[in-house]
Length: 254
Image (cartoon, rainbow, N blue to C red; front, side, top):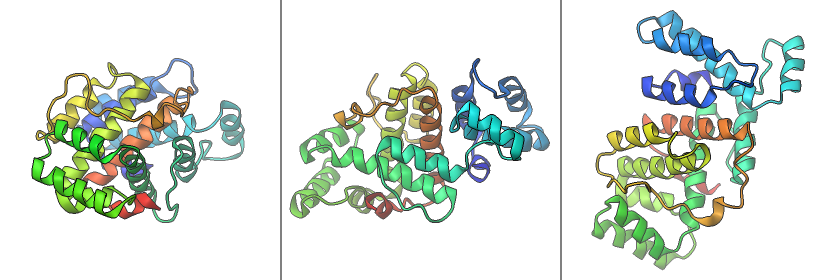
């Protein structure tokens, strides 16, 4: 996870640190907070903070017993980044190609999660959701016409083609942040929502609701202690991964 953590900004680190914080774990939260407080002015502290953050993320993807066992016999006691991404995919019930870099896997995870959400809605519900977000009527009509003409197809590539990468990334962020808010609580996600709207000023502020999640997520138990940390962080890092490149939306249908 270090490569993608290196792309994070201060607000990203603040969020990840807040999710990792726990009184009941084998992690060094106090040291992480100390490093975070000085990391902007100290490159060495930044490097140490990223290493510790990476270690803590992978710790939460492992049971305490397994972690302690690996700690005795290995320099890398936490699960691998690949295992972490696969575990989150399994929990969210999405399938992605597992080849390539961790960054590529994170991008695919986010794209597949968003595709699952979009495909669970009817064209009419999608039109209403896009309208609330501030998508122009002409663009909404193009998307709906394409969906009605082609039946059940991957939606994200269509959205990308019609709206372009910038708006599509805003939609992806909105859906992912809303899902994260469902897991960690809307109060805890306030700063995330603030940063989302700052990066995407075209999105209409919808009061307490950014995106009305479909019932497809209600059947998934996202409340396990570890998954309350690993899923929000992994999805968020997927958003970070997408910021500096074009979304390969075709992977969402894989």
